[in-house]
Image: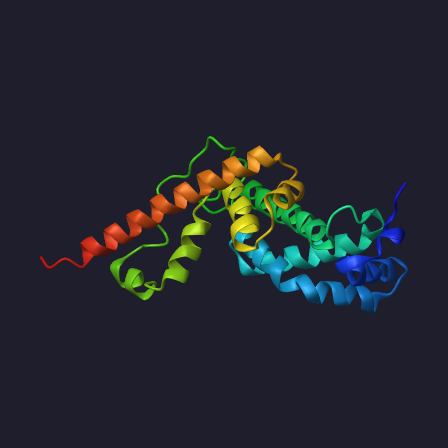
Length: 209
């Protein structure tokens, strides 16, 4: 049976060597791994939780759990993919806890599956003044992504924002490749529709009365 010890070759050799050192108790090696990916993991966590403080908690919890479970990483996937899977699970648990505490955002639908759509997303365009302040496309897109159901948003962030492959996204989320493709397509369609409505509304608001 192939183990992580005889996989320390090729482009991932340095990373797997760090994993081996960390498994042997080298904290510095583990810190080097975390520094390599901490911003990416934080960005993913923030997209899912839509809250900076929650995202910071998720990153800390995910890194701690990754260290505790480092002996379970066999090198069959990229370390980053394995780490992201842990972070996504922690972020979704954070959302479920928030929902159970009845403090979940009105547009968060953590338990939704592919057939569920969110209600009309309004808080990203609450009034004309804020709409004009949020005129930059990047800001508009980011806020529109936040309006997607959690299941779609997570797939979209991992695949289109973070650049994971379809196979890596499926592995990270425990989904089949067809399910990832389906959710990604529906996420893109919803984003297109929401952005179209936004710009149509913005254009209408600029018309002289």
